[in-house]
Structures are given as structure tokens and as C-alpha cells.
Length: 353
Ligand code: SF4
Image (cartoon, rainbow, N blue to C red; front, side, top):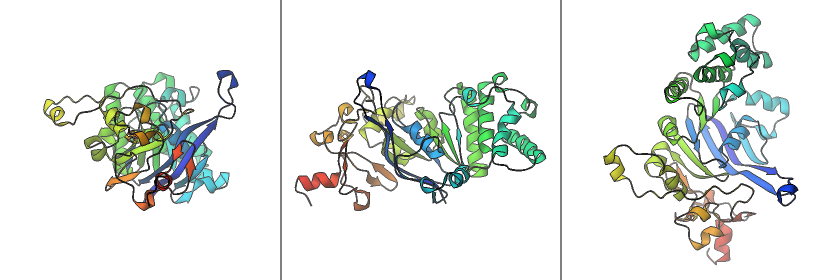
């Protein structure tokens, strides 16, 4: 069962900052035509450098930011086309766990009040039933009941993250969106929180999208991985495909930073290019393939023609001119974009069929 589907979802922010020397009306394309699908119980890792659009994608999925274009289907219903009340009802099946548990929890409320709030907001259960549910949730996330009346600032980082997860679980979501959920935790606490998330997936079948710059964590927990660069997914596949045989030059360079301890494993790896330079601002996305100014394998057409997703194996797609032409359903025909032209348009220009 598909719990989430994104179809060519984009987010454009307007800039009105003349004092910074930017053109009035200039736009920041934070997310461009992102398509994704996630099944019940599946875990997807969303990776990329800062500014890649992964956090904006997460916020679009949970409704903290509205899409500028595209469809977001939750449980088979397009939430971008619903009335606000219906949208809220559908979206409650998708909950977010934030990076910094301290700033995302109300410091004036107790653990019990924080975890109970979604039940009150959604008018679920009587006072007695809500209290029972809070106790059950604390057991589920492994937080002792004695902390029920404690405020978040008296808890450790790992305990606070458990409170955030308990709050997200309160109304039985089908999907958890986790934005760097272990970034502020030390390594041993990270392992326990990741273990808890794994249990939730197995026991409750909750699908998870984990946004992280920590590739080691993603390799450990995700079933599939999507790699983002300047707002677009440039490669997607199973965790084994993406980590075992990364195809996009950006993915290869990004993964070159992962230390490989085992000398035998290291010797078997192909040469891994280093990632040079900084990510360009999303306000000035390069034409053609946005990665071309940093790409060690760039060709002349890379700066003018935007590559489209190409299936290179079952479930493994890559957007790069080094790979054969995409199959017809993946081609986006007859549209021109501010950041380049489609492959079909380019082929027409150079006289190909
Ligand atoms: Fe590099 Fe060209 Fe592929 Fe972009 S399309 S990743 S610039 S080779």
C-alpha cells in the first residue's frame, strides 16, 4: 500500500531583498519537480549537502510549507486539492520529528501535556483515555513513567527525542518524517533512538522518511535512498544500489567522504572522486545540469541541457548525461524550463528523432 506519493512537486520562494543587490522578484527554487513514492513500512533516506532541498521537501510532505506546483498524495488523496479542514484530517496520518528536540518541545509544558496535545487538538478520547494513551506511548518509546510530570529542559537529549517521537505517534500516523533526528545526540544515544525507530517500523509498520546528512546512519536504517542536489533528486535506488554502485558523479563524490575502515573492502572500491567547491545558492541555479560547475566528468552539453531521470536498473534511476536516453514515460516532452531545456527539446534542436 502506497502511503505517500509526490508527483513533480516544486517549491519556489520569492525574494524581495533589493538591499542585497538581488533582482526584485527573483526566485529561489528550493525544490524542483520532486517525485517520490513510499509504501507502508518502508524507510526512505533523503540525503544531500546543506541547501539541497531535503528539509524543504520534508516540510512540504508534512504541510509546514505549501507546494508551488505538483501533487502530494497521502493515502491516495491529493492533499494540495483539498479544502483546509479535509487537508488537516488527511495530514494527521503524517507526523514530523524535528532535529532539535529542545526547541521543538514547549519548555513550559510537562511531558504528559506535550504528548497529550495532539489528542486534545484532534478531539480524540476522553480525559481518562488520553491519559492511558500517554502512558502507553511513554512505554512504547521506552521513557519511564516517572518523567510524565517533568519539563523538557530537565531531560537528556535522548529522552527529549523520545518525547518528540511519542508526540508524533500519539494519533497513530502511517508515516513519520524525521528531520536529522539524531544530529544533536551523542553516538550511544543515537544508536538507541535509531533502534527505537527500527522497532516502530517492524511492530507498527510505520513508514519513515529520514532526512540526514549522516550517510552512515542512512546506510544502516534505510531501505531506499534518494540523493538531492539543488532541489532535485539526482539519483534514487535501494540502499544496496546507492551505496554499492552509486552512478551519479555527485553521489559518488558525496560518498567518497565516508571512511571505509576495512582495507579489503577499501581495495575493492572504484576510484572515488572528491567533492570540490560549495553548493551554489538556490537563487542562482546553474543552467543545464546544476552540478556541472563541480562535476569532474562534465561534458559540453551538461551546461545547457538538463538531464532527465533514466532507469539504469530495476528501481534505480539517475539524472545524468553519462547514462543512456530515458525510456519514454520518463521523458518530459515539450516544456522549457528556466534552468535548461528538456532532453526531447534538445534532441529536436540537434535533429534527432
Ligand atoms: Fe556531470 Fe554532466 Fe552528469 Fe551533470 S549531467 S552529473 S555535469 S556528467
